[in-house]
Image 1 (cartoon, helix red, strand yellow):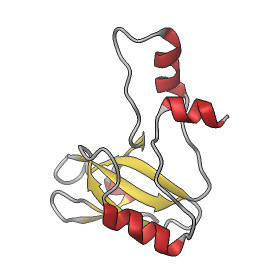
Image 2 (spheres, one colour; image 1 turned 120 degrees about the vertical axis):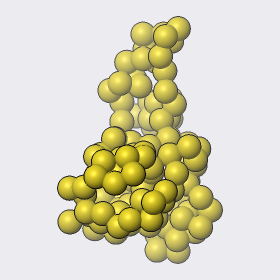
Image 3 (tube, rainbow, N blue to C red; image 1 turned 60 degrees about the vertical axis):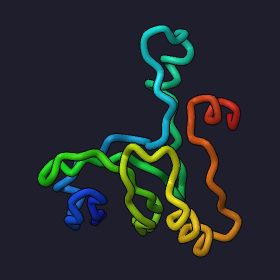
Image 4 (cartoon, rainbow, N blue to C red; image 1 turned 120 degrees about the horizontal axis):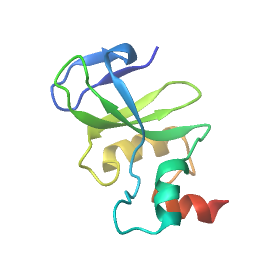
Length: 117
């Protein structure tokens, strides 16, 4: 079972007490965007085997959204941080790099997902 700590209220919660919100750090497109940009925002997502950044909501607690960095294969959690943060904090990036040599943070956006394919 996945266990995360809410960075706002400090409560440690099982995934059943949280709501998953999909991939974190996406560039959001809305009114005024092209059909392709809006399509990519809705449907193009990373689905890595390994380190992944996700949005979670502490539904049975403070109700706030936050981000989590975790490994999709082992459920190891590298850390959680506020949803308003535009990239993972340096201490979380360092923790990931220490366990996964060669790993580096990159921009997560629909454009970078398309460039990688």
